Image (cartoon, rainbow, N blue to C red; front, top):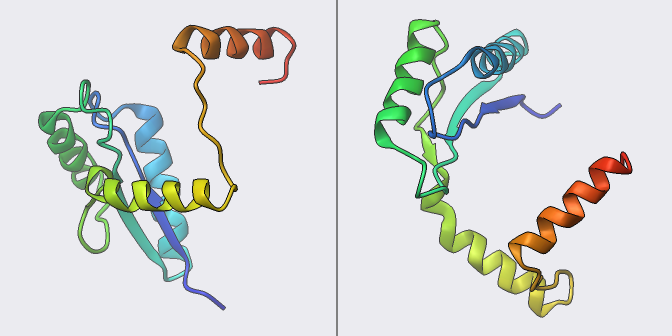
Length: 119
């Protein structure tokens, strides 16, 4: 059987909130129950809204709750070159396509899907 590995991956665009704390707690408990690992991955790819102070608050909040993660914290922005390489591979193999829709077109499609209960 494979080792259980869970993770909590908050975006540092605000302080740790109750919903995030609950998710982290459930993942931490599941990992501990199964003698697994609990990882912390910071989703800091939104460079406009992400702030180091929020990352620090999230980490401090988890520690205050007694939710110690295993290993080093992973910062998703540090994986950007891996993401680009994989995206280019998918495109070259025709397993993905580029979308040239405008932001407005995407929002319109999203709204339509929600109204039709397809989202």
